[in-house]
Image 1 (cartoon, rainbow, N blue to C red):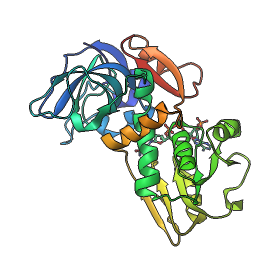
Image 2: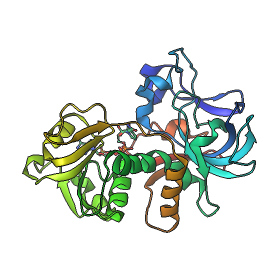
Image 3: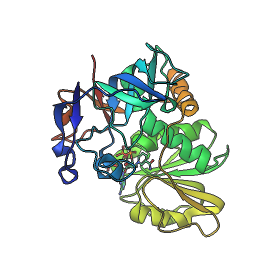
Image 4: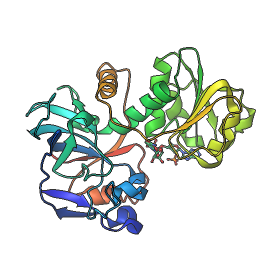
Length: 305
Ligand SMILES: NC(=O)c1ccc[n+]([C@@H]2O[C@H](COP(=O)([O-])OP(=O)(O)OC[C@H]3O[C@@H](n4cnc5c(N)ncnc54)[C@H](OP(=O)(O)O)[C@@H]3O)[C@@H](O)[C@H]2O)c1
């Protein structure tokens, strides 16, 4: 099968090549998915899991990309809950070959049914941003209606999902980002925008929840904004500062069939919209992930037309 592979961490996305790889086999509890569309997060090439297996053994050449939408073509021994021919989408294991390929073997529990009226391209754009937003807000952040949320990077992939889901849940949203992000953040539902290039975080009043996607100094300074009993949730690495009277939680997103269902239901009925910036073929994927001009929104690889 055709796949994008990487062999050298230092090369980053410039080291991606299109190659022939053996078609994967579905192991026990796996599903073999014919990939129709695939999503890739640039940060993943810096993670150890992209280069080694769970025992730390080199697993290169590895196939990156961990979001997919496609059709089930085979079931491994003992696999239940999904059937051959079914449309699915989901988030695959970080330490296995990924989804920038014509086929991927995925644990069934990492997949959810993709309704027939949701395009594969849209399906592949949802798992990481949708699940990260859901888990950060409702599992780790324990968000309740009426609370205030400071959403860093509110115009980005995760931040735009956080903004929409939190707004729907009845929260008051202050989005942040660069000057150019203001209108996008407001369009996704933020009621206020704090320009990190101009405004000072410290001038803000307190909030119940901070959702950080930026890390570093922004994350550190945000801890002081959390009200008593509130939470700083971050996906940008271990927090360097903690709220004086609250929690600081960093987490890595996990796949979850029920939550994928919640996300896609909202996409179907118009409550949630995804931000796709570019769609390219597998043959053109290396160029798409090494753009000469900045692309706003997520790049999705349409593996099959
Ligand atoms: N732990 C996890 O489970 C998990 C899950 C998903 C993502 N992540 C990580 O979370 C981060 C965000 O992911 P994403 O997909 O949302 O990325 P994204 O689409 O690039 O969104 C990030 C947003 O934050 C803005 N931003 C970044 N640094 C900023 C700064 N210093 N000041 C103002 N605005 C800033 C970006 O603006 P510009 O584009 O102008 O820089 C962009 O609008 C990535 O590092 C990703 O690897 C972690």
